[in-house]
Length: 279
Image 1 (spheres, helix red, strand yellow):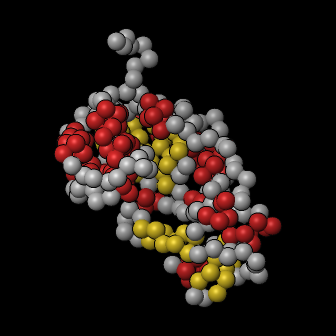
Image 2: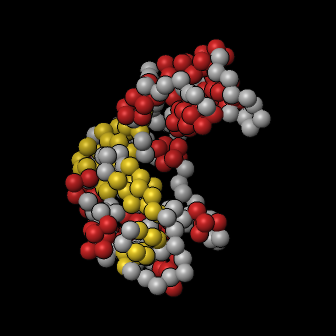
Image 3: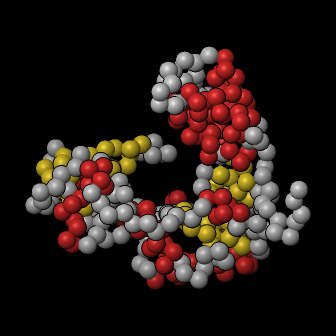
């Protein structure tokens, strides 16, 4: 991994007063992502307030669409160059000395905002019509196959013009059902991701507040699928309160099991109809 980063021109040896520790993060496919713990640097960084799209709003924009293609940028963040004067701030230490990034690494607090701004700039005029984008998740859409083919060509031309590179093995073209933003989307509506639901189903009884928070975090992502989610989860949220002593009893186990049960039987949620009547 390290040698590949040097060969690809991602990092270089610096002379820098900065130094942050390395962290390896496991990815979905089991491989490791090279990250650096930039918390101390982030603490003194002026924050970029550029907003990320609301996931709910993004999903709602799939109404009436039948064809989908997913594009995956090859190491998306690493395709963004860092200003020369800021490179030294990205320095990190390994067993092979001090190194710094030539491109934008994971872990910088402003990296998501920077990348979202870039993608929205590259795809100006196409977002909401031919495609939707959330960071490095790009979905090309279409009501008919012909429209979808045209939209795919328009998006690819924009990406090529920006000199961005895709990872062909991770792209998925001309599908009527795809995984997008941890959901499974199709013309019918949206479903939960089977892998995430399997994690919920197999979740062991929490032993401390940290484990309760982790469980609630995963469940909360799919709260739209569970009626009265807030009421059911309330006892578990109370258990995580700062001054509350951790004690797992029946009042906690009942909502814990109920959330697992309901999330394992989630329906397909249809898209909102702007012309429909709701009560």
